[in-house]
Amino acid sequence: MNWNSAADFFAMGGYGLYVWGSYAMALVLMAAEPLLARRRLRGALRGAARRARSAGASR
Image 1 (cartoon, one colour):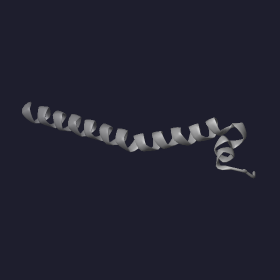
Image 2 (cartoon, rainbow, N blue to C red):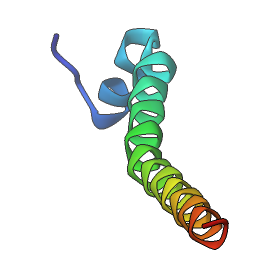
Image 3 (cartoon, one colour):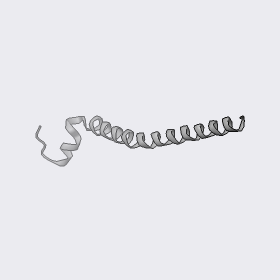
């Protein structure tokens, strides 16, 4: 495809909203995944530590 201007490029022949929206959503999800994974890991570690403390106290 040939574009005559930057506006034409960003409009993508009328599909720019879908194209750039897809890129934006992918970027948001890729940025959120490591943050959410770290949050889940911390929760799992806290739960494991809590279970280990309660198992040690019951002995």
